Length: 252
Image 1 (cartoon, rainbow, N blue to C red):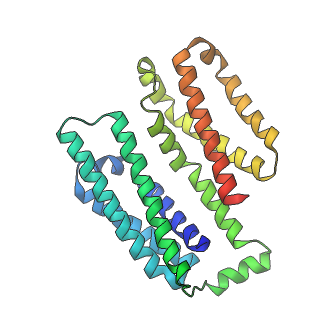
Image 2 (tube, rainbow, N blue to C red):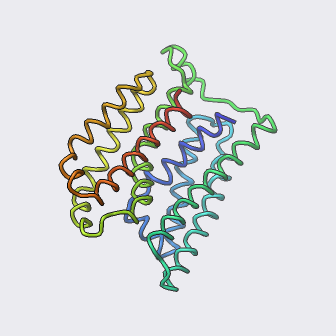
Image 3 (cartoon, rainbow, N blue to C red):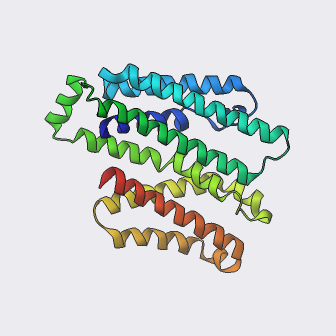
């Protein structure tokens, strides 16, 4: 089940976040055609991922995951369109729909990975891939876990934090934060990568120094702007929690 879940998570993260531009995500809310385009791209990404790691189950993994993804994203599309037509769309409801969407995706991936594990499906990998890792003395599972963790702490984590904090963003600082958004995302990604490495090596106290350095850089504004201080603290705590969860469940 762990092998199937790893493949499904890798395919999902790549297909739902890295092959989808921000502009495409916005278009999906207004036209169902873009939902179909996204789902086809997701299916292609899931197929390629499963062919590389578990080629013997590629058809089952890709088709089942692609169908479930289409159903969930279709539900999200009609929910957002209904809220927009009724003029009831708010940042809170948009955030809730995003979170529910990802929760349903995780549940579907767990279900898809459970079935072949329960029925003891026979799986096989490319011999050239397994031989390479055996000769190099590297764990294939650990390598896949690190790749997944690094992918998660970048775009998916940045997007999740952005959605969760959108209702707490200081109103009078919106324009300024929009200018600094890309720099903030890069800082957050680097922060989580460094924490992943330190936690995996058991250097927990050193991980705290990363947060200290980040706070020093923003100390002047934190001390003078209470709204920004709370916004900054929420973002930092969510970022830290994401790094800890990734290290705990994927690497350690």
